Length: 122
Image (tube, rainbow, N blue to C red):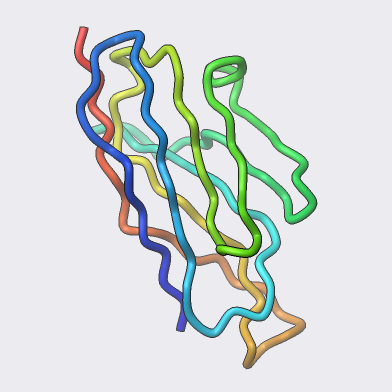
């Protein structure tokens, strides 16, 4: 049993900033990769950013230089700092975590948050 709880979404004007948080809890032995995806209405879910357990990051091209992903392993939490927001960033943002549970310490499973709405006005 693993749950991911997201927070930090909201409404912001273009050029503004938001910081999203996603905390994992439950029967966690270890968390490997973590990251963020987003999905706008009528569109397919797309990658935003990922971060490995050791801190190596990867960003979608449209987010490079504006978004920063980070994590706090002691808190089982991943963050997404979003700066210079644009109206096209409006979407539901979903976090995920690749988790090795206490019951399955070799196998890794992906868990997803419920999503948090980010709306950017022009």
